Length: 124
Ligand code: HEC
Image (tube, rainbow, N blue to C red):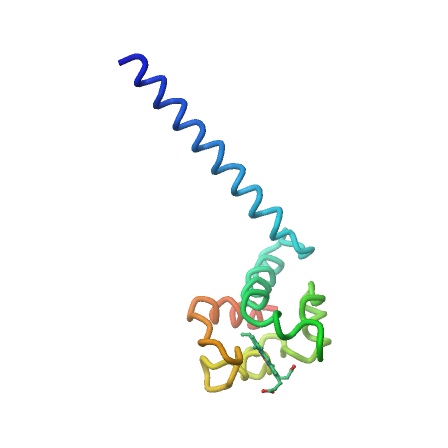
């Protein structure tokens, strides 16, 4: 019995340990240079991750460089978004979710991802 408890503690603590290190690894690998210390920064970060996963494989390198937009101002200057007006933003208008053709050759982004993008733009 005592051995079983000891074994349980060992297994449980090693799980906690590995959870921690996974969380750390994830946070570390997603450290992409966006200031997340404010709600505004956090909204930009969440939208950036969606764009990174669904768009940047094409929209970085050749005819534009989305991955270098690490601030709201950067996205505004690039012409991709209209602050506080997601449905006037080319980045949103082009989405399959509302009748566009992006992401090209892929299914439309999820509603949750769509909401992260519009919530970011509508609260700049
Ligand atoms: C498989 C490659 C690919 C992916 C993935 C992709 N695009 Fe595009 N995108 C293109 C190409 C090629 C064009 C130019 C042709 C056109 O306009 O249809 C383009 C054009 C655009 C344009 C207009 C031109 C510009 O650069 O401003 C916008 C806005 C856009 N895409 C948004 C997105 C968004 C948002 C996503 C992710 C949800 C996305 N795209 C994912 C290939 C891609």
